[in-house]
Length: 214
Length: 214
DNA sequence: TAGATTGTTAATCGATTAACAATC
DNA sequence: TAGATTGTTAATCGATTAACAATC
Figure 1: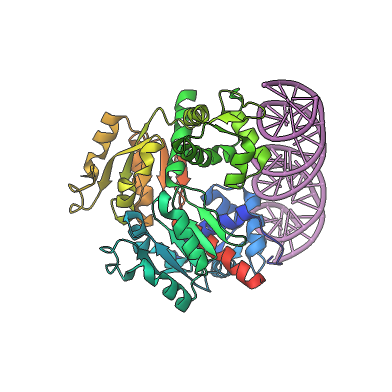
Figure 2: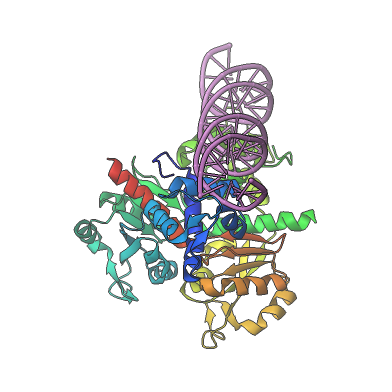
């Protein structure tokens, strides 16, 4: 339990799902939950859940009872780094960019988009909810002043690499990329790709296979 | 090469990346490309690329030359099912829903969102680009008439399960879920989750580790 | 106590990477 | 031909699942 030994990346990605589920339980004032019950609810393997929880929980579960919900939530928050909230900037205030700016879910997960940038002079100066959209020229200044290390790219594919380079030049170390291209970055910069169209295409393909198979 | 033997899911997910890259080559009028060159460009393992391509390509690559770009693109399109375009409906025309409706990338990947639905009477009746937004009551009729089998859920978490049930009742077999909860579906219905907040949180966590480590 | 649940060690499974013979 | 590249078989790696002793 929380022995600092490395946790598998896959397990790490499952944590947010446990987290959401546990928060629901918390709202229903349920105090204890056992691994098998979580497994059943989220349709995961029992042993997998047990192993995941053993890896994150600061306190061991109790045989016959399970885990204390509040404490487990705390442990997952800590493991996911929800306490030390991280600032991010977004480049490209198109439809998708604005949707992300307006998205409420981030704050609950320890992330805050503090500013957005757009090269279009008509867009810059406006705002989305409480989030201001600045012209590109302001990017270096704001990134430096606010010590931002995360960037979100929601510009067209053709502009993505240039934006990426600009972000990296200005101290960004982790990038969430919505443009459907492979970004080249220098060693040490982390890129996570979000290829919307591809995701949907994969789903569509599964569907075709399913239909054909039956 | 295309022997019908199962391809790994991971490999399947890489196909859209090969596809984008090959399309770029095509625009630059490059006719042939070798696996090692692709591997270098996309920063993948050489053998992995070779294996992936061997699995999808209808024509074998030529030693010393590589693969014919046009033909490889055709093969990947076929494998991903981009020819038999699949219709989808979207429920929840909020900011995110509208961003997806307006997103151009889907059509290139063989997917078309044909209609959107929203329970808000003020939203229903409007449209996003060429896509009309209907009241929820129209959903059964449109799904049935258009033989739609894919659904996209962009409603708040609290409403997602109800919307999911409604979709499944109306013949939807594959769901792309943006609500941060685990949807319960009957056997045979495929759910792909897209947890925005979680994605960003994972990235943020990696960043924290990176910073701490140095 | 009996039995449900825990955490861990061992076995299995799936995907990636390495090694290599075949080809142009 | 020599050498780059192909496709495949074997070895490695990582994650999941199964088996089981420990605990309350």
